[in-house]
Every structure is written in C-alpha cells, then in structure tokens.
Length: 207
Ligand SMILES: Nc1nc2c(c(=O)[nH]1)N[C@H]1C(S)=C(S)[C@@H](COP(=O)(O)O)O[C@H]1N2
Ligand SMILES: [Mo]
Image (cartoon, rainbow, N blue to C red; front, side):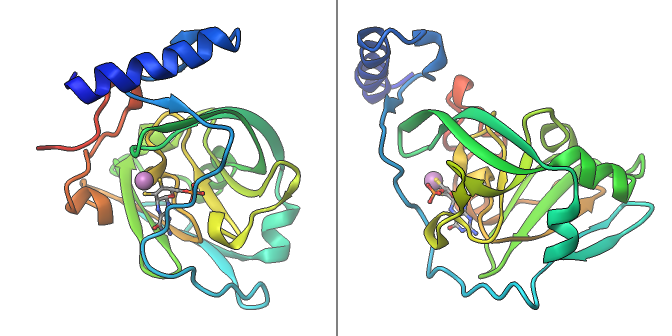
C-alpha cells in the first residue's frame, strides 16, 4: 500500500467510524462520499429505446437479443450495495433496480468453454472480467438508481453493476455481453488499469 493510500485509507476509515459504520466496509485508500461523481470517457451516447437491444452472445448455447419491453418483462430485483471507484471515492448503500445477471446468463446458457466476458457499450467502451466475477449474486443489469431511471451520465438506459470490483467494470450504456473463450482486455484494462480490479486488494493499476 502506497503512502497516498495510507493517508486516504485512514480518511475513509475515520469517516466510517464517525458515522457509526463498520470501517471494514471501506476498502484501503478510499474515502466516503454522499455525492455521485460522474466518470465517462468521451461523450454520453444518445439513447433510443425504440431501437435499443441487449445481446448476450459468444460461447453460449442460445445467443439472444432482447428489446426494451422484453428486458423490462424479465424478473426484476432491487438491491442495495456499496460501490468503489478507482479514483478513491466509495459510496455506501446505493440502491438499484434491474435484472439479475443470472437471469440473462441462464437464458443464454454459457458453454463450458466460456471463461471470460467482454461488456460492450454504446459509444465503444468495453470492460472484461472472468465469467465467475460476472456470475455472482449481486451482479445485475440496472436500469434505475434510487428508484428513478438512470440519469444519462450514469448509464441510461442500462448499466452493468459489479459491486465487488472497481466501478470501471460497471459498464454504462451496456448493449452486449460477449462470452469469450479466453481473456481479452477492455478499454481501461488496456490503458493501465488492473485486470482484476478488486478494491479490497487495492488492484488499481497493473504497473
Ligand atoms: N460506457 C461506459 N461505462 C463506464 C465508463 C465509461 O466511460 N463508459 N466509465 C467507467 C468508470 S471509469 C467509472 S468510475 C464508472 C463511473 O460511473 P458513474 O459515472 O455512474 O459514477 O463508470 C464506468 N463505466
Ligand atoms: Mo473510474
């Protein structure tokens, strides 16, 4: 852990203690914020629900593509989770509505050789993760935050939500999940961010 992390890590822990929150919820080097900072590379892509589709393809038995109505007709869930950005802010108890990832993965039927996933977004952003990171209880494709549709800046109409990883893995403007038979790196992973991105292991960058 670097010196910056030591200082900032203490800040987050102190904030948690002062607020009566379990400091173990704050990963090393993070501070707590009640704001919701925006981090988008490039412009927010325009969204058109009439032509929008979400696809799951690649190493799956039943590749599919669903439109907005079909997406909303799937099993929905509400969950409250902590999120952690590599730029050092963490936000506790954020509440999201969306479709559990397992509903989508079960429908697609991931084949045994499917080991990794690339998330593709409107605007060209990508991010990768092992299938077992995606295939988790708390991962969802979210369309609402705090009971309201996602704001354009935060990924409207849908974003991936992967709470156990730094927030760059939570792809905004999500359009496609490509199941792959080997790992490939996404946008920030190619540009120096850590492939695994576990905030509690402080996997920020690979250099
Ligand atoms: N499509 C897309 N998704 C993205 C990004 C992006 O630039 N484009 N930025 C990532 C990064 S680096 C972070 S920290 C979070 C920020 O999400 P927020 O703007 O809702 O806080 O989105 C992630 N998902
Ligand atoms: Mo980020």
